Length: 381
Image (cartoon, rainbow, N blue to C red; front, side, top):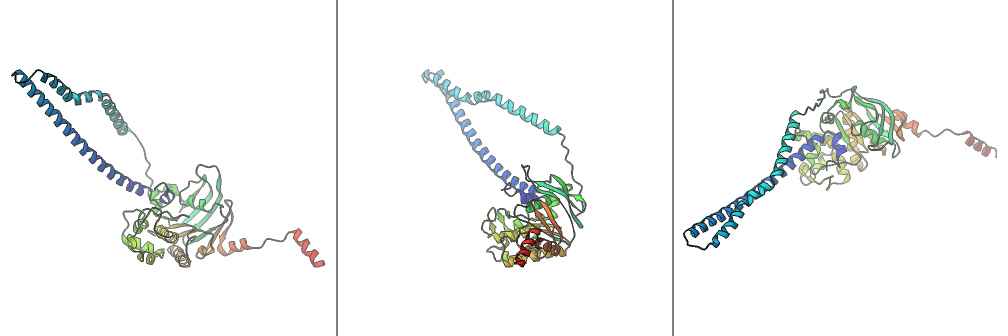
């Protein structure tokens, strides 16, 4: 589950919390399994001990009867067999003594190594929350485990309260740029800075608290809707969850569900429509009023009502002096942004105010000399 949702978990700073949650559940399972095994082994050992004790008592009684000539000598054979059976546990211990010593030696070695290991983990300095600028400088990104460059030398600066729309044909590197900005993909070269500090100066959880991210495919975890919006954080109360849902204008939709915020959904959001998953993903991204919100085609499955809610959410982020980056193919997602970045094959084609860039992109191509000759010939005829 965590591997399938790794991109979203990393961007939202949920990695450690989800791993901790999984470890707690796994530890509970292991403890229950160990208790069951211990009880079973205890009963088995007790039954074997009782059997051996009983056989030994019978051997002693047989010898007593032989001495007093109250039984035949055959009882000695029976006593020998009983003695062998009684010593069987000791023989097994001796046979497995080598394995026991190897295990003991391994434990001592491992304990000594862990005790004397000197692992220095640099704890990042707690930086103040970003409030001013997002700057992308000479960013070059390639896909993981590949040498193909998908974003080449992208640079731009956004200030608090601005919204950026990233447009371009499919495969132009828009989603790759988004992943690099939120720290999911490390850049091959270049930096992403918040208020002058590169994003690697924050811990994953701290950086994730300042980021809101909605990927192309919204990844929801198995659990309740409230748990998904809360990002598995323990410091989130009900009011924060409801506030995030209202910021995404999804509160009314959630309370209309059979169990409201406690509605159980399956892994990946099973039980919800694509549009509902996208809107709940937006609410999760807005939890805690993050300063930077990156939305990758957030309206691909939304209806008119969902488009209005998305526009309202983008306006809300900008009004509280946050920065919004929207990657979109549908123009309705760009209503509330004031800047446009046009990409083509990973290269910036235009960047600036929305009206200027859109006018530049939609401007008809200038007539070529060849076309002018054709027009002149037609006019002459």
